[in-house]
Image (tube, rainbow, N blue to C red; front, top):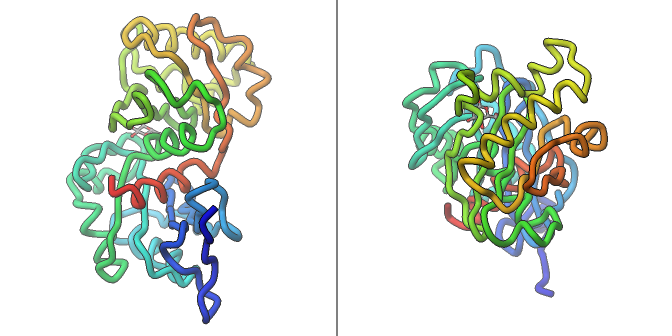
Amino acid sequence: MADVTYLGADRSPVPGGGLGMGIDIGGSGIKGAIVDLRTGQFVGERHKLLTPQPATPEAVAHSVSHIVEHFGWTGPVGLTVPSVVRSGRVLSAANIDPSWIGVQAQTLFGRALGGRAVTVLNDADAAGLAEVRFGGDPRAADGLVILLTFGTGIGSAMLYNGVLIPNSELGHLEVDGKEAEHQASARVRTDKGWSYPKWSTKVSKVLAHYERIFSPDLFIVGGGVSRKADRWVPLLQVDTPVVPAQLRNTAGIVGAALAVDEGL
Ligand code: BGC
């Protein structure tokens, strides 16, 4: 196994040598960590700042620069946003400030971080990369894998033979005339006060729809609710195998670090 250099002479982390940095930008928090790219583990603690309100692109870029400074990190940075991102540009804003639409986020963050290399990608796409690489389920490496994150919305990542097909946005597919995320996100469950069994019928309906369209080999279900996976995953009624995500709340950060390392 190659050596990993964790700390430089001034005790700041040394980019390269198997390390990367990822930052996950969410509606309530912006979280970053140094990641060991060979194991998917954090090196040290993650650092979190509350998302500024309003969460305008400039305010968020400012918080991002604080996180990077906190670690004394000088290398490339991967960042996630809860949006469609094409060639570094944000193209949707379902659950974030509408002022993000059209912003060239790669240029914005690159400038805020002193001109270094940055990669910006969708939050669920990052989680999918991380789960397929480090989640530990051997079935995830081959065929069509759909990862879904259940939170305020429903995020999705599609990977075929380990290769990401970005911006799948399955949470916005209509199922029986209504967007999937408006009927089966974790937020809908809490807003309606549904039990896990009741909510699982809604999730099953959505998964069955995806199954009919895409015929995936495996579903991976994540987001905060995957902590309670035993209360709802076994109740899901679909033919495709469904497994809970393993990386939990580290997946976005790890996937962001992987994405920039792999030059996505
Ligand atoms: C957004 C996606 C995002 C998901 C999870 C959806 O509303 O459209 O881009 O991945 O929420 O944050």
